[in-house]
Length: 265
Image (cartoon, rainbow, N blue to C red; front, top):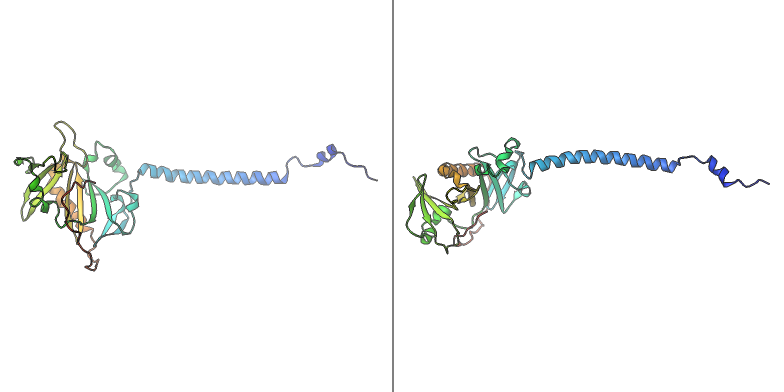
């Protein structure tokens, strides 16, 4: 009859490290290695995204449909990531360097992010027209009835019209100028006080382009000396990006015209 083996004798024959422990440790090491690689790759990607801070330096073109107009818009000109896609959209928001009329580039990041340099940007909002007249067309039937006092001679060939305090435009003024062969130029501005710096978008104007596109653009009052060149450049830039081969049925109805309002971006 065999004697029972004492527990201490059994423990002497057991391996110091079990197979289960080895498998677990190996799996843990492999997991940590994969995690390290993922963190490294993800960290680089996140770092690049943080460096862009919502901008895109891609020049990929997106075909965007707004109302009855289709446009080819580059990713680096679109301000918001959600708008960088193909298809229909209610609006598109762009920013462009002046005078280059180009989008974001990493080497020019300061001109987009530094508030002291952002006066060289033009902000553009594209949407389907909701009024039959653009800002120039609203001067006589609407704005002229809101003028407060006589017109004043402004700088750069512009005439300054102050607006009534109860008109709903705050401290904005309307600046106008004749343009040969076309309606008067008109732009609303919240001009800075004497000695104060101009903001990056304290002047705004809207124009009609394409079939039914309203182009509202904002720029710094510090650029008013370039008002004619800016207006021509914005119109040419958007017109050049409209897909002229697009065809739409004429079933779109114009929304009845509403009174002018402060539709700042």
